[in-house]
Length: 565
Image 1 (cartoon, one colour):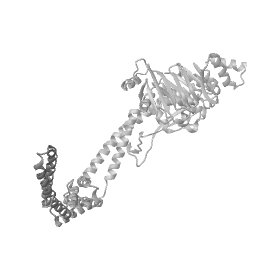
Image 2 (cartoon, helix red, strand yellow; image 1 turned 180 degrees about the vertical axis):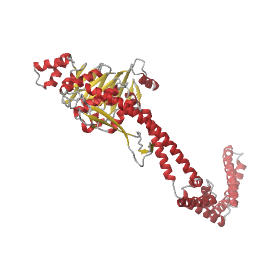
Image 3 (cartoon, rainbow, N blue to C red; image 1 turned 180 degrees about the horizontal axis):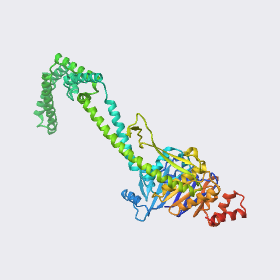
Image 4 (cartoon, rainbow, N blue to C red; image 1 turned 90 degrees about the horizontal axis):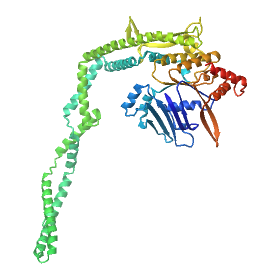
């Protein structure tokens, strides 16, 4: 149950704190006062979409917070406990912050949580029935969803959807691998040629890099020999560095005993001499190792050209070429066993069709049984809502087709991700009229009552503690409005119910009444919400009856409406 709502810097609301109680909570106010802002704020707290344009002009963030009593929601407590969120006091404070930079944060009892978890949590807190539901009630997809919700078909729906996806994946696989004998032979010829060409090349993984290094060495062999020979002569020749350094070492050695300072530097010269002798030995061996062979260079260039040709055909690298060869072997093996593989796929497909058929028919039977129950309950609710004699029928039908995948009784039926059934609500609003499609048969007022009747039946089995009806009174007035109000009050005996209404007959049924107003102060417009006293409630109901022309008579009428609720 929603106990407290705190809103700061959201659209026209500067800062607002509201406390709510059990029963029927009514919100009224002039058109444009900001009633929808409250619904948008609650929707945002529950994880609904919200944009930075909702932040009050001139502010850097909006804060939205709802405090809920979750005493009667053990499944929600389990989710919170598993997420590491403390619930010892049976209260849940959900907060959402929206920043002007586009980012936002969500919290549950002070613990930051992802938006996905917030949406999971919200499923247990409040259900909002918005103004657009009158439009959605005309859609057959909504009819199917409502019937499945009543029948608790969630698990069966998941199974059918899984089967549907498996069937289509198998169909695509069978179709993609089907080929006639001529196509198979062409494919075998190509795969065999490619595989032979790759195998004959006898490639190794690092071969190309090694060949390129060797080719570079052979291409520069003559220059390497010349430069190394000149360097050796400069080092070891009669006039070379080593001869001169040896002479220097001998001269300094003879005088090093005279001056100790010379001895320390003499060691550096001897170290340089030893290092240069090592270098000379290296280059002498290196020069001997250089073997310029034009034949070997041609051989390498031919090998690199072969690899380059294979790369153009079968992959960007030797690794990819070898992988392509593996895929050729696999495909050749499959094609060689084509008939067997195709039959195996088709057998799996037939088994999947049989499994899908059983699951889809089980779902259909569940829907048909639930449809009969839901019809009777909705008709009973419609009678209570002043639609006596109305007939309500739920059609659960299947579409036959020559391309259908599911065969039942010699006929084939189309399969959809949601099963075999096409579901549509039918209505005869008045006794003696023929049943027709809901979107054609129902007026605005009738649609409001049908929606309320269906929601009432569905909510009887729902675990959610709090409900919000945004303008459920569309198209009704007079006695019907009084009946709808009483139905909402009855619903509020077992749940916390919020209703935004323009009708006095519904507002009079409230256990708590709030008025939404728009005010100007210091050049800024603000939306405020005030909980009305009994006297204030009488005056607001009178305003709803007669507009701003409130008289003693309208006040008495309002009081009578409230006392007779």
